[in-house]
Image (tube, rainbow, N blue to C red):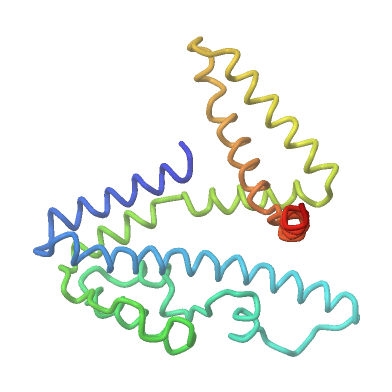
Length: 233
């Protein structure tokens, strides 16, 4: 299953849970749902940045021949374009809270902690989770935690990055992706195509990610020259 389709499936499951077990309408629970998605994604980005910063520190330590005493902090993450997520504001921490505790209060606190540490989101995160039943929040957290889509998307990003190390590798992969698509279409409508669809989907998704990293072509200079020619004619 495509990671994006899996993520969509989990969103519908969360919406169904709230629709069935809360007194709120969709306009009232949509923002809190987005807040939980934000928490999950923010920790995902934070964890990825942690790994990157640790590798960078290890390389630096190896270069100077001794361990650096400097600890990685909030500024390092924000320099990477990533929000700093305190431990008690992390999605994984919320999952460890006993189900008989006030989960809504804990999530509100998590949002406040993130705002305190990151000026970019100050005053904008939802803090209305005490309006939900504890049992409902527990189930919604479990639904999002069971979604492996973010990890799959991360693996696709890593694959795309490894394939654009140089132009030759990039062109070779894009050529193979085009060949895979042509062969897949050639097999259709034979049912045998279904056996190859998951692999074909992964290859095409990586190809799209590679395309998205290509810089936009600046044609302003060409347009200016054309306009001058037209004015002169």
